[in-house]
Image (cartoon, rainbow, N blue to C red; front, side):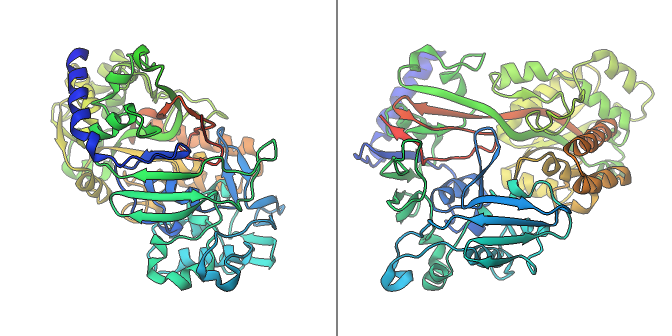
Length: 531
């Protein structure tokens, strides 16, 4: 089999080699965005491709390190009021924006606290239609203000323990008013920030070039100014085969994620890099803040009178397949079986909860006496997850659980479950910030889709009360206890079928040093070096 794969690779090399424009500067970091980039304006940083590019050009108050710890960035330090309703940030006074004609004769200026107020006002402007406007639900924008150039006070209407992580999101990037006024509607294609790289050139669907910011404020441990790289070149090849071939040829410095059709070419069944490639690149992986799951809309199931309306049937479905086998043979052990509830285990480490596992006896006992248990249920998914859904279908069929599978395009599929058009659907939730509350918000009744992420339309007053109490917790132990109670309730009601907690997976060229990954899949290039 591998012989034919190798022949296929050689063929692809010949076909696609001429498609890539080589950049011969050895100190340029090169990668590809298959899904393209739609905007370099932080208020539209709502997907990974936009976020990665925006992060190179702009800065936020805080950042997350490789262990998801909150670290200073524009903010040197901060303190919180006793009631949790005010955060005071002390900003750096040595941060300059990229040089631009928008600043007139001086060509640049210092970043100041008022820039934060302006930046969030753009998020809050309904004329901008920013998909990130929801982040301001936690902040009192009327009271938030700058005391002076380096002191910022952020006010909240109610305590929100996850605020510092939220503020690391690209939506909160510092943007200078002069640049937005100067470029107008074209600001998204002419971004001016204070990040380690500045915008140089963008040829849509072909190449995006960023260059080193020689005025960047951060230094390494040896007092060398960052970044080390001279620039970043982003390509937009859409064919996944071509992307991997160009990576093997050295035209890209890393690739993120492994398509199911290619993973066996690079990894063995234990998820380790095949020996043939160890001289060329290395595998980097870490748990990802992403839970893959099957969602159950009980209201929809009740209207359809299908067996998913019965709690014991939903529990039986959860016990009917082996998550460990699924992770090993369908995902090369590069995921963690979701046997500890809905929240990824890297966030739920302050409480211990036993989720679902493969238990044939439990399935048979739970199905006993359920009316309509022989009726077929329909599982909606996309092509990329067909293998997982077929595995569940086959395993559940051994117990008489009949599942049919309907495949849709990603856009159609998302519209289907967000509009309550499916009683059983495959979905995933990638954390916006590193806090269990962000995952549990999917089951808060006031977040029902299409206006929020509660796609199951779960409504439970006990859960809602626990969720609301978590915002006012005085200690971390109390928050953990509340999260535990919420997870226990979700498992009891069996409103979802947790499948696995995903991992960030990167293949990185051996001549690249200084790259780190974290559970948010952050791309931070300021300390990356090419050897």
